[in-house]
Image (cartoon, rainbow, N blue to C red; front, side, top):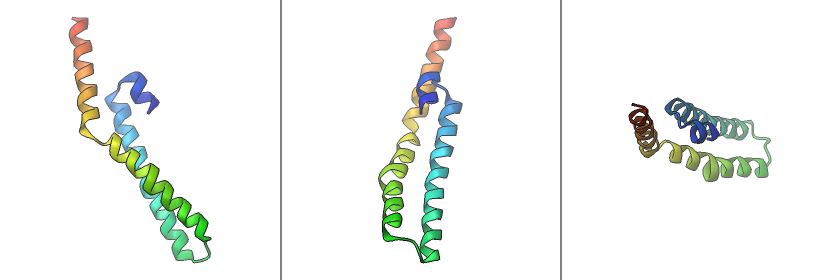
Length: 84
């Protein structure tokens, strides 16, 4: 998120999206694995579920919105025209 904000880079935004969605999937897979294992404590399962549902998924959805790409593309275009 810091790289996107400071560098205003579309590449950094793409990597941020990939990292966030991989994190969401990883948390989900770990939760399924713990549930299948059967000896997990209820607290660990609920904590992981809350992290995924309340933090990871909303962050991934927010940064996947097309407005971020269009903003960075317009910013990039305006900096090119000012350099001419």
